[in-house]
Amino acid sequence: MLNNKIIVIIIGSILIAIGINVFLTPYSILDGGVIGIALIIHYLFGVKIGAVMFLCSTPILLLAWLYYRNMLYNSVYGLVISSLVIDLSEESLHRLLKNVVLTPFSSAIIGGFIIGTGIGIMLRYETSTGGTDLLAQLLSKLIPVNVGVLIFVIDGIIICLGGLLLSAETFLLSILTITAGGIATSLCTMK
Image (tube, rainbow, N blue to C red; front, side, top):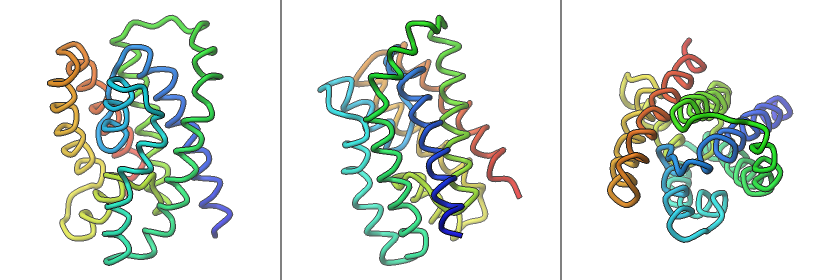
């Protein structure tokens, strides 16, 4: 069972890294949740995205420790692996970008869908990248709302803050990203 989860985490992490490094960062587009927070900090200060994700997820992991430890253990693996994959693949995926020509509009949609698919695959197997995905997963145990919808709401709050700090264009493109990501995550987590 653990081997299957590790495979799912690796596949999900690769998809998330591709979505972030190939489609979002070249156009300063945000995603929501902890990834969005990490992207805001990356755009403003140049800090590694995966490292910020890891640090920002710590309080939520503590919450999971208190209320649902099984999710915690699975999310720690997802958080560590996805943070490493995002940071370690950054340069090689940026080189790949030279061969990909997209508009910011299409990049926002494709990037959001790829990230949402990576997150959705992980959530389907009760693992996540930690952060607000884990928070949404915990909340979905308490209230009868699809985890993808909860992630969409949290993501909206994050990009509103990011839009204020970065630009109106970033905000508008990020809306497309979280919409595509929310749809992909919901499709992957439907039962």
